[in-house]
Length: 394
Image: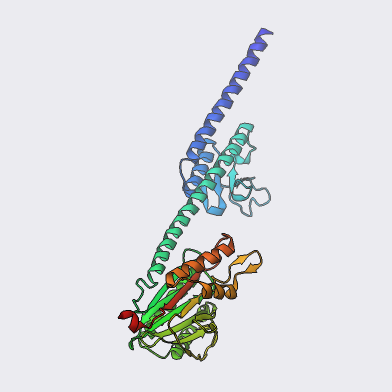
């Protein structure tokens, strides 16, 4: 009896020692698997452990093209009795399969209990390491993309007017806030050979990087044409044809635009609206004027001809051009809309263009009750002093 008890106790001790050894081996395997954050190295480490430490005949991650050791070849000779392969799916934290580990045991035999336990534990650790490696790779790619987008944002900001013209008797200001890192809104001010100023506010269809690229192309074409000083209606017509000729993808990213030519000395203005939101002209003692579209957006239809309209920009008058991001702000199902924008612009008591734009932004944000910006927002305000320019210079 005593001998039997000793033998039993010895057997339990050996079994306990084997369990400790298996645990130590699994801990060491886990350390090796987690020692890298590169996906390829994680997979290679798992295969080496399976073949070298567990002494399996071979192992592979077929989807990734990695293998180690010897896997039985499938051929016509052994098609009837192929050697069994063990398949262990590696799943992420949400239970989605990432990849399969395929294992071939020596001679196709069944695994012992300790071997099966070891493999199951290794698979769990390998799944965690693989998911971490993939997340790390995605994070690096995202960081690189974010860096590129930040650079693109800075470049796009640099393409906006860096210095506003000093126009005696007038004040001018603009503001442009993109919905994402970059956007499709465009604004420019170009001095003309005859001393007038050409102003453009435009909006490329869509948002984000594709629209930003198209707005840069639009800028290059606009500046190239504007410097030659063509009539405003002809400029819009040529810009439309140029954008159409850029091809199918450019036509999907058509451009709404509103152009203004200002003659500061006489206070005369000329406006062409190419499918854009109506611009507003507010002057003392008269009803507000809206510059409605004189044709389709640029690049949408070939052969489009545009017409311009002329007005006097009298003392005390103010003008607003904007993109639809200012009016398409919602509070529940209610839209801010152009009527509210015109009313806010018309009743604002501030005399300077920059103050007026600040007031408009505050009113729009208050209406939206702090909700996220859903579109690019760009606006330009132009104001003329109460006295004619020659009296203000005196």
